Image (cartoon, one colour):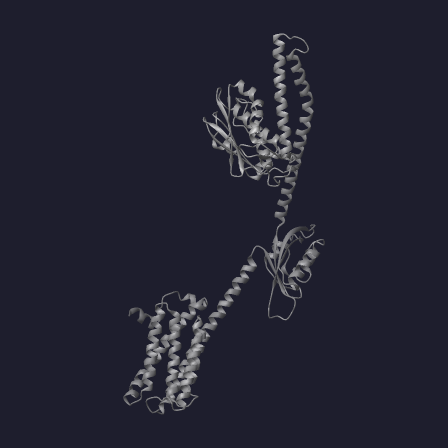
Length: 604
């Protein structure tokens, strides 16, 4: 009850400043409450007269006052509960009901009752926000039909009309008309204030946005230029009117801009172009002007109802000079990195070929000396010749790996794919590393199934992969250990694994397997020799076969390196072909890293 009396006295929840700010929905709800109070107030004022006439036998005033009181209190209660649509329709239904009563009292078809009923759809249009407003028109038609029946004498009011009823009907219509006019005026002012606020906010946004905004008429003339354009071009806004903007565009970029503007103006298509525009320095008028790269986004303002074939255009201009500078620096850095990489590859190829000739002579003559072809040598001389021979072989292996690495990085390693039995790789590879295994007393074990499917690939490259894996496993195994080679089919892949029980690696080192020149132990105090190119070459050869290189290792327990090769060969090859395919190496699975370290590595 207290909340209801608060509503009658005008105390409503919510901020009153919301209506002052012109929010239509808030003002509509407040108008509903105000209309309910008006209905209650007028009904209360007319109640004494209605009761007096009721005592004299006049029923109609009492019915109208009762309808008004019920409608006022009911709609106010619904408003308090937040049921605004029901409150609005309560007022519309009350207007229709009072109009129906007045229509039945007056037998004439055109009277105040019908006029009052016609105000109901207007109220519904102003106060409601749902499709139910159409129902008011249906009810209006029903009221008119009942009025017509009353005119024909088929429907009658249960009392004889009195002379004062005309005055009551006129007053009821006048109050309803004034209340409707009050509602329309209040809501119209709310929408006007709301639209003005929207325009102010839009103008404030456009004026202070970082990018410059310009609006062109359908004939190409400038209608509006934002304040931010002054900062972009270093001039006043009025200087961009007329041909001011066109004159600032670089002469070589004007055709591009005009073509894009024509597409938006005539064809209604949004376009974005980047052109060079002159930027002035207000502090130094005599200074030679500089040109800045500006991204111009042209958007047509399409008006479907306009008869003109040309559209207004809104342009959004953004300074992208810094982005162009960064792009140019990146392109230059990439070019320098590629040049450095190519120079490195050429250097490795040249130095490799230059070294192989004298190294072959050193290895050949040292082998002749140790074999006794040139005569018997003293034990000391034989030992020296053997050291020369082994050192020469070591250098030849290093040169060979450098050449292979340079060819892989340059994408010039050619695959000769053919079908072969993968089990036939094991025995020749064991013979190649047998000497190294005997020096460290390593036992080589082959774990092969009875049947293996044939593999399509480059047999020479696959043999080199297995030799490198075996050499690496033997080098990092403890003396007297075991290195196991296993092969098995894994779906449409061939699984080749080499496992050792050596020193192992930690997780960070496993992630870097395959990087060129990477070694677990670096520095001058490292125990194991090598260039760090073995697994890098393995990675490159596996990638050429569209395969995958994986490693699993635990420090102190050993390492297992697994190679997965597609049985049908690289994806770019068909099983039945044996053509030479040149494939650019891609980034492997085991060495996921960002592009920047890769570029740095290639540039070194």
